[in-house]
Figure (cartoon, rainbow, N blue to C red):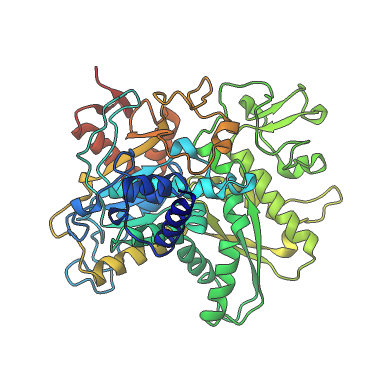
Length: 516
């Protein structure tokens, strides 16, 4: 018996290594693979698993299928906005040159934001990259399958969502850690699906701000996870050589802990209901792992009004505890931190451009430009400009979204996958929420995952931590909706159209509400 067990395990090892399909393996053997393998096996092989998808049921080469876009939250909507507004080609013959019509006007899109598991940028910091990859594969599975829930309280899953014909990874962190993993998953599923990421697009875009022989500093502002991956710095330097840039180009990076989180209203970093510091805060602080330098308080120029900073004293100078509680204040902290790195380096170059290496950051371009102007003009006590010697007067901000749209256009054109008769108004929008029907999950009073639970889960425990549901008033706050309406109105209109055409939700007075 022991000998037979050894033979089975050896056989299973070879089957896994060479990518054998489970329909050639006995059920008892298949269970061993699933228990000791990844989310990929559960999706492809385990018919009893929620995430199982029979890919043979779908024709992924159908031109009429939507384009899939996913991110760790709502930030990727800025990438979708760049795509739906993209007009660099003639719609009749697809030759270069704007014709006044958006290039993707006949395409529909399915957007998914993994809001429950965000921020993705923090998983690497707690050595949970494998768990992050599991989330990323689930994102891809959602786009490629037909399953969703209408509301967070629904018990019955619906199966009338269309799959997608191409996947755009709008999340920089997901691209850095998971693009190759998704491609491996797609290969094992025997699919011919293109996966487009944003990092290559951003690297090319930021280099284009410089002349081929120009010296300069490129700044990278991204999530902590993206910075840790060195995805941007390595790709920028790779393209510098490939594209023939001869100047002295330096790259300085800053992990923007708390910026994306405040945009998505992650309560570990931003809580508009607070007036005092709290114990569960995870952002920069005087005594935390990411430190606020009290000597730089004048440089940060934080806005303390309306609890945008949480302090344990009435006077900012007397605070022994300081916590950031506002998106612009997070921007202030990280831009000063970036410039301090450059100042300390004693470089002779100047900061010429910053790539916004997180899809949430384009929501804050006005704030970023305002703070950069302040820092360019900042003088110390003796009247000396502190940062002007190594900072251009106008630092260009580079959003990778336009280059991502360009790559998507070129792919659909080359593969003849443009939809001849569709339109943007058929687009659909989904987010993940904690699955309250799963009694194993741990959530706070706001209904979000507890921080330690979110990052403490083990990879390989394949279960429904979350539900993928429609955008609704229960899943998207008024503040976020207003931001979308102000910053990316066309996307807001598409969300409005989607909400008004399905039978469960509608937008009333610019707010999403659930019908009775």
